[in-house]
Length: 390
Image 1 (tube, rainbow, N blue to C red):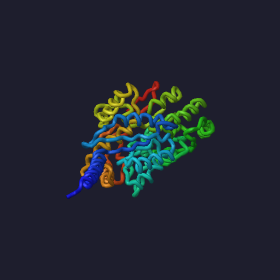
Image 2 (image 1 turned 45 degrees about the horizontal axis):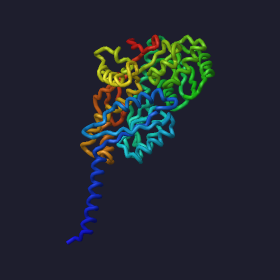
Image 3 (image 1 turned 135 degrees about the vertical axis):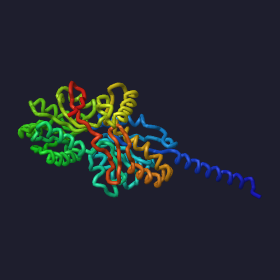
Image 4 (image 1 turned 45 degrees about the vertical axis):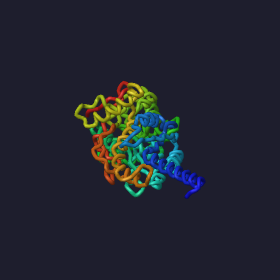
């Protein structure tokens, strides 16, 4: 027979073991999603609505509670990488959403792939997911590929008589990507690019770049920037008396850009996700219902007129996870390598998913999944976004 002391030791051991199993059960009961975004720094006008949107995402999916761990990378590439490593190594997340901008997202690919953790970027460059390889197999993205939007701009330019284009873009991966895809689109639509000028997101003057561009006398100018820093060349062009049409990328599709650029951006044209002009879409548009759902949710929380397309990228990441997590749970439990791999596979096989920006159909070689339904052309008229129907 066991002595009283032996029974006490046995009881303690059982209690400890029970606690361990209970802890394991609690861990398995919860899905952890890490988020790193640019809520401060030059990309804050993009990152803030993304952060606001994450707060609206569900706290339970597939019968499991969901914890959203949100970190700010300050628009800084190094911090984005540090956040990614922390979320994987310390918080043991099942997936990562982020970052806001292309340079950060590109830098995050290595640690995400090394940690075999699915990553859903909210940045635009197709280079984040293509060409597909073993590392990028873990990476997905919600914004429309810049090539899809570049083709929309070039097609619109051709239809409206533009022959020559001056290019002014960010001096980073975003600007490089846009120059490459627009160069291809321009050739397909018989446009000639006559300048390739660059500036930094933190610059306070682009006088030199604008003067060189105007010296080439282009029919139109494309500003390949994102967020409020894209207002700088637009203002300089207006100040110097440029008379041609000015185009922007979908990287400026938020109200902060309108506020900062003001009257200097009147008449500018850009491609955007349908969510930007949800209320102007015809009822026949296949994206109207899903984009209106995001608009209603966001403006209910943050006020009428507060909608941002960039927040829509976070919303779409949430929609992807809501569809994929229940599928992954059939093959593994949260917190395990099996679950993360199953989640990656489920994301890769998303089909006919209506989101704020379009209809997603992922494949093993296309981790964005958008087609032409994910873009419209809009113009800034009286300080507001107007859907263009031609």
